[in-house]
Length: 125
Image 1 (spheres, rainbow, N blue to C red):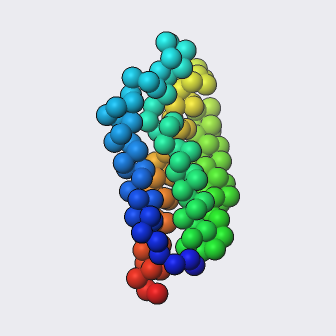
Image 2: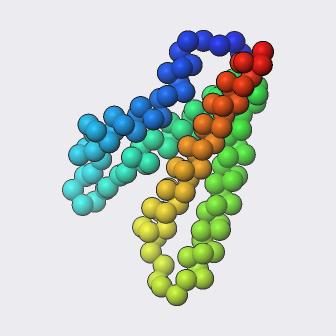
């Protein structure tokens, strides 16, 4: 476990700050005609994945990113089974949108659990 640095506080609030800034100022730039339409989750997800890696290394001295990616694959498989059992036709774009939403929610919860773990280790000593 590494020692506390004051820049870590920025690291703890960065995802929320990024979501607010993107929603407020950069939303018009997230689409290119009708071809590409990104959401805030599409933009924030890579930063969350990097943050999961860095926070887990700071807290536990090894990365939990492979474990998170395994959980994401299981969620994708379960979502595939759900879409396969439905009576409606399969639409890849819809599958992708739901998968990104699920992955974003999982990453955000996992990220802030790691933040709480890091704070717990810092307080405990």
